[in-house]
Length: 172
Image 1: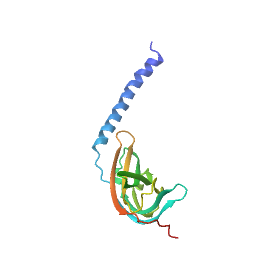
Image 2: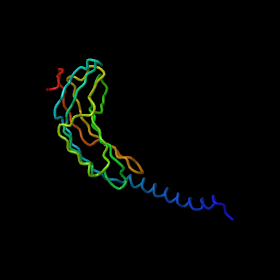
Image 3: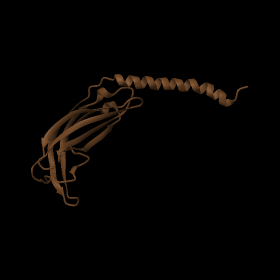
Image 4: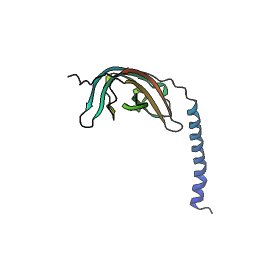
């Protein structure tokens, strides 16, 4: 009568069509999300601002206070949320942005973050000697990675400050 391949095709075609319809519905629903994440960031202190003797580049350690509430971006379609803090400053007429801290949030219960005097994962470095006296803006951003559909990202908080005019060592 019919071969096994014909029977497999008869079964798999409707199943795959249903899966494709479900993915299309999921992708469409992701456009109508209404989230309102909040974040507040501010400078806690400048740990140090120094000239790296080996690379001959300016580097600074910035400790910051961070409060975020990303629970509103969480729903049944969220796989994880990437949260990052970057420092932005202007040097020679160009905006420079340097990532100083990031994390991946995998559960909604972990989406409410309160950190005081958070040490950055990465130092703020400039390939020239252009950090002294610069106005630096700390910005908090997030990226939502869904199981299916369109990813969402946005900036949720910022704060500005000036770095010292002279090099300073870390306080002992």
